[in-house]
Image (cartoon, rainbow, N blue to C red; front, side, top):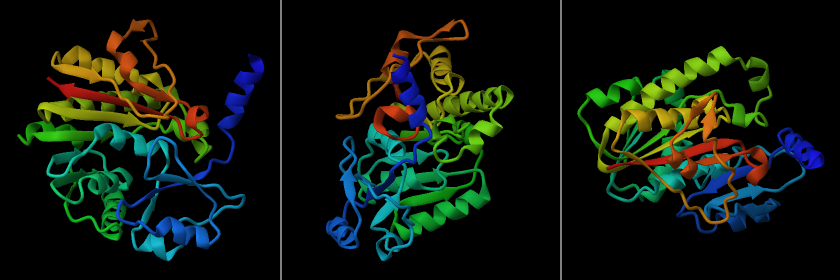
Length: 291
């Protein structure tokens, strides 16, 4: 048992594979990349997701195919919230914290550029990156807005679906940046948790009846995950958690209690991912319907 625990902890520090998402229309790109010497392996839980299994580091953004928008360099776990959201052509969808655009472009891909996406962010510099990525990917159904996400509930606009990939501590992404560990402190987690609770209420209140909200973070902190979703269930009786079924995705059990607080039983239907589950970043995903 100790050996198993040690191996799991060690996996946090291993150099992760290089994941990317293939554009749905780019049918011959895999062949072209393999001809360049790329060793490619499909991500088992998403048909458009792949890993570059190569011993030395590659610049994923230094190819003609990347500049043409045929693929997007995106963390594998980061693809899961959009899989759970299940966007459809013709829908009105809000990506409340959209920059730099990995999930926005993924949503647009599944919508076949039909319908409307509101891609929002509060940071103008991050919005610049969002706009560049949308342009490179050829996205034409997206409107960029700069607004505090907490104010959406006051606008009177109701969405079919909302993705809230909320600002977080990033403790699930230690393999990407070890500075996360150096910067960690509980006061920061508490401040983020307060913001996340405000954002999730605003997002839920911006849904149409029977609309779907997907809440996600790249954090492993219960204060930012299960606690926030449980808060929504306490405040909104018409919020119902739905089970997320994704074939071949290995999942860990979410927390059902934290700091002496027992969570609603339906929290068990949310997804908690540790880095060792699927060789990805740590992530948390919850799917909530407005009934």
